[in-house]
Structures are given as C-alpha cells and as structure tokens.
Length: 235
Image (cartoon, rainbow, N blue to C red):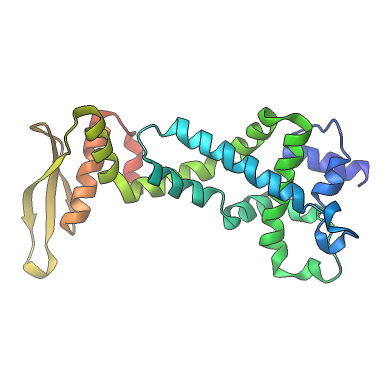
C-alpha cells in the first residue's frame, strides 16, 4: 500500500498509524490473498468483538433505565451487517479493499465486503492505538446510528420504559385511565392518561387504546424528566 493511500485512509479514520503496514492486512480480501491467514478475515473477527464491546458499554452507560432485552435489541441493530456496511460505504472504505478478479463488480462489495472493511479497520485502529483510539473512532461514526436506534426503541417501548421506571422508583406499575373517546364505533379515537401513585399525567390521543397508552406513557416520561421532549417526533 503506497503512502498516498495510507494518508487517505488515515484521514478517513482520523487516526495516524504508528505502523501503517497493518493496513495492508486490514484491506486485503481473501479473494486476493495468497494465503487466507494473510487476509483481513482475522482482523474482521477481532474488529467485530471490539465493536460489540464498545457498543455494549456505551448503551449500558447511556441508557440506565433499559432492561437487558431492550439493550440487546438496540445492540443488534447497531452491530448488524447492514449497519456496518452502510457506515463503511459512507466512509468509502470498500474502495481501498484489494480484491480478486471479478469481485470489484460483485454486489458483495457494498454488502459483506463493506461490513468486513469497517470491522477490520476497527481492528487496525485497536491494534495500533489501543482501545481508547478504537472507541473514539467507533463513537464518532456510530453516534447518529445510536440516536436513531434509541429513537426506534423508544417508539416501540414507551410503556415498557415507564413500567421499568415505576418498578424501580416506586415498586408499583403505572395504570392507564381512559379520559375520553370520540367518533363513530368504526372510527373511534381515544384519550388516555398515565397514572402513577394516584398522580395523573397529561392525556394523549390515539386511534387505538394501545396507541393512546403509548403516547400517554411518553407524556408521563417527559413530565417526569426521564426522556427529553423532542422524542415526541418519533411517535
């Protein structure tokens, strides 16, 4: 790998390599390697583990009210092949991969090969600069994805999040009170409010009772201060 290519990769990864030769292995696909042990497959394995550890630790610290199942769902989204491939393609990492004949036009270049290029790049940073350097890179490129994954999880689990909060803080679950309903039987909408220890929070409307309860849970969580107001746009 020539000096200009190394410089371009360093700029993309925002990491100055003490041992640039490590990039030769990180960006060598097995289809172009004389020996698969010299390809990026081993680094892909290592990078996947480093990525998982950093993501798990970040989710654990950022979302103290989430249970294990909620954290697992978000983690699965973030470390999936698709997410890794999307980030790699955005960074244009596949363009630096040395691949065998015919692979350059393969759909795998934007899929599995792209995902592997990100994981092996993470391994290269980790081996060259340690965990702190790898974590800095991962959080920089995954931050938006973490926010989006959390928003999607919120959308599905406002009631679950409120349930967890109430059990932890008050040792009692919330209840939901039907305040009003409007419309004909075939097209009703419902207003529901969450109630916690006899305190009723702001009501919310939904086209089903289930949706209204989700929105009511959101209102309660905002008023309590568990989540910020802007999450309302994700409902």
